[in-house]
Amino acid sequence: MRFRFVQILLVLGVVAGAYAGVARALDFDDEDPAPPHPEIGLIYTFQIGTHAGCLPHRLVLGPGALPPGLKLSQLNDHTGLVSGMATQTGTYSVWIYLLDCANQSAETLFTFDVWPRRYAIATESVPPAATGAPYSFSFATSGIPSNTIWEVSAGALPAGLSLSKEGTISGTPTATGTTTFTIKATGFAKDFSGTRFDTRDFTLNVASLAATAARATGEVGVSFNSGLVGSGGQAPYTWSGATGLPAGLSVGSDGKLTGVPSAAGAYTVTAHVADSAGAAKDVQVRLVIRPRLSIVSKALRVAVRGKAYRAKIAVRGGGSGLRWSLAKGVLPAGTKLGSTTGTIAGVPRSSGTFRISVRVRDSLGGVSIKKLALLVR
Image (cartoon, rainbow, N blue to C red):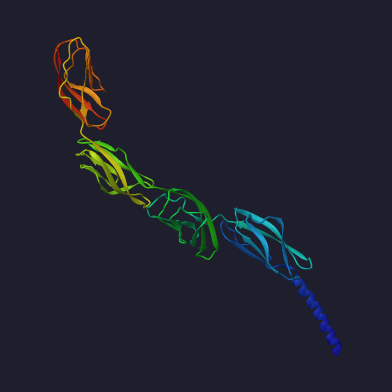
């Protein structure tokens, strides 16, 4: 009787084992897989678990394709891994085959919906810098709020500058030139949705902050209207602390140089200039103030009727580009005043004393008028 009971137990065990084998056939852990969304710039990992059959298990790609940038690898003897960083948006479907040590198989269709980038470097360009002037500029990101670490991943910053992990370029450039480099931002999402990357190329121009005068020559007693012109930085420029100015002139914060100079000479003006990016430097500009224009001829030599005559009127001071004219009176018939030479020339056809006022004007705006008399015998 006991022998029969044992036989019954053995039969029940075999049947239970058979049913257990059917229930645990080789398969994926998830019968209806829904992979998390890959995303441009996101470090992506998706584990695919398997069970039953005999170990080790092996996963193989079938028809279809993974999103570009992702790959399938074997994590261990019963887990596969899809990982990488997607490079193109879109929906991608692929069959993945599961094989065990006995070459039994199963397959499932996996669909990956790749989202657009949701974390990026927002900064589009960096402002220029100036040699010898302190420089500071901070990068920014947009999208998923993240704790970001910044680095230069290719190229190099200009000499004298460095990038902090917080994303600020700072320092004092030591040489002029144009430099191109790649900035990499690694963002650790504050909502724990993953780690994201973005890179962008930037060009930083380092110039020497300098200044010139829009007009560098003036004249005593003549209204002067010029301006200091900045270069080598980022406009607009702000000016202050000008020294060495000619008496009668002043410089505004906008660089306008105005006034009426009262003393002739050559002057070296020193001014502090700052550009809109914060670069600042003391620069020098050279100004020349000419003596006031004046006619110095006291008399004209005597002319003879019917004979060729020529007399040049002398001037002192002023600038170039003289223009002459008669302010009053007339010259003897047969003679005229050269408008650019200041010379009275011709053959007088009548005798007498001709009283005239001659006027000369230079390119700086100076004017001089003098009364003269021409005697023709």
